[in-house]
Image (cartoon, rainbow, N blue to C red; front, side, top):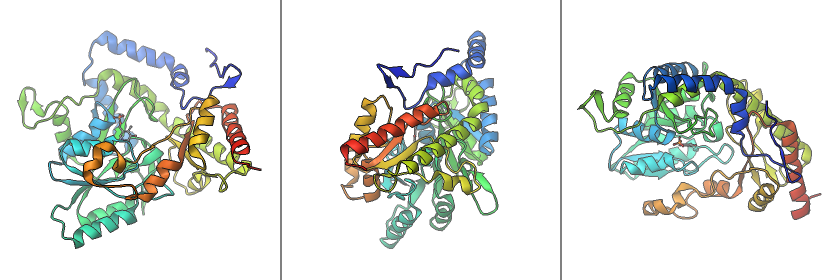
Length: 406
Ligand SMILES: *Cc1c(COP(=O)(O)O)cnc(C)c1O
């Protein structure tokens, strides 16, 4: 196998992720599969997609899975299937990828935001309850129809609190599990796959996600047979039988090539998640050892998750710290060949395109603070200990030089 080049001009390279290394580790299987599909010339839906959907229902512990063209389209088509239309209210977190709320607005429904829990970065159930109470008290005509919790960075949201609110206030829960395939959530009697909870969940197969395609792809999973039928119609323009349209849908199909590639990769996913968790634990140990934690940095409590007895409470799609002088640290790490990234630098309620919603600076202080402080360090299954040591050594060097640390 070709050796990965870690150095450039004496500097170690630690990319945000290394998809080439992953490809090299499964190259033979993938190449064979691609050749098979290309030889068959069967590209649209078909057996590969059906088989992949079946495998996803097993992996996600849901009854149905509908393969679609992307995670964003999975959100759009789910909202369509749930009957979201002009004037409807959909509540979600402002600290997420654009598509979570963008798809709501595209259907001329209104996204309403709700602040995050500063510890998990996920939608705060307390803040959600405040919002629901306030709207009820003000007798606001249009009730919140749907709530979209986002399992950000691969970590499960507080689903039991959100689900009990959904019964009290009669909204449906559509999970954005784009970053959280394989994440678990501890219920009272058993541990659930987080995407099996609520009305439906969406998954993204964007190449950088934990299960990434070689292009775009997504999936909606649900236990509702009627909803799954509707999704299957909507992804082929709304037809149950070809050329006879019951609904107005679109072209939202997952293609056979992507499904075939994802079927190969799905077999490795549990192992890849475990490797990510091990890297996260090592970051934790090294950062605690550095003496920077609590002084300059706040880090995710990886060992706490590990001891909770729920294997995949956090799947570490991203390993995210909060850092003092975040922007300077970010620049310093990038200068030193380290692919640190900011997810996300501007919360959705402050995006220019959503100015019509009437939010302002200060509307959601926790989301705004997180946007100023978070930094994702490189994490992927192939990341080496030497690379992690290099990342940590550069973080230490930064605080020594820039902030009179030690
Ligand atoms: C990636 C992502 C999406 C969109 O997925 P695409 O496949 O890129 O369209 C939606 N929500 C979140 C939280 C994501 O991270």
